[in-house]
Length: 531
Image (cartoon, rainbow, N blue to C red):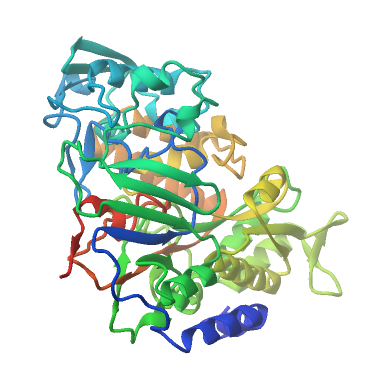
């Protein structure tokens, strides 16, 4: 599918939305306030967290606003101390990590932070009764030991290279979270942490409001009042930014471009590991057929999607690892080759019918493809994918819905999904591909099972030898080229438009999650007013 045809198809499908956006663009500064308080900021995000408890997975990659981990990331994604006083001491062949804790830290309720809170947090996450979908990322952890109030020792089952990255996990207070049901207690929505902000209100589906923690060990933030407006619809988010209701927002490229001539706002781009892919459920008789999966992998025109949907703000994706990552296996790029895709289907017995859609043994090559309603990028990727698939004789019937509507159908229906983590390839791939996690919520949504991939995923996480890990991940990527678990489409750069009343804003290399923790507000506690 050419970039021109993508634009034409999307324009037709989104005519009403485009008209609304154009109308809103007519007055770029209409309603923009010029006298906002310099100690307050309101930003628009696209996704709402399900919980604010780190015990259930909130903030596992850092920047949680309410909490701190033992370590955190700087702007360059290098680890640095947070609740720890220094980086860990690693001994015993990479199986023992010793952390000395920062003195004098308190939770926002005034209670002291100690080693007991660290032990409680990790023990609770690993408890089989705790509903934390990411606990597999701590598989290497055997025990957590308190040496004294300021010393914690992690004992690993095996050397695990990215373990220090897992200690950016937020630390929860034992004196509160330990006295209630971890899965349903009030701490999940009314958390208390050691971080730069205190949650003052969470209006579900509307906004989260924070106040600066005056006792924060890192210094009181200059932004005293921070509001994160939850606006799932991209067009509405752009309209509210344009009206002056928001100080900043994440926007898809098409909408970010409408602010290009606005002298009062700046667009910042963040490099990411964020991908868009199509799940290919193994339980579906069409998407579960290896020939169909291989054909779709060749039929999609990834570069046209980058050009036409992302306006160049991204790159083609051939798997969870971006092509510019040192972990990418060179040579696993798949060219757009519709002819080869058609031959694969012919050889596998999928024959075209009178309407151009193939069938095999009475099974029509047709399946449903869901995308999250209100998400323009997912919608446009879904439409482009469906158009490319149809050229190969495969029908993808595009439907939109909320996650509540989509999740019950994920076993049989395809989903325009996303993911990606820059910290380590284990975080990208284990939850996505390992067969033990098939159908486990949003983990391994395709229910993929490949013994070679399983074995190499385990090999890669059970060593801290970089060469051995690189060889394992190369094998995984080559296997995915022959036996695709998903159809990967693009890696998406994140674009943020922000009011110029804030200076020296930065972004990090970002994961898929681009809500509270990402964007220029990754370090809102350090923001400075321009005047």
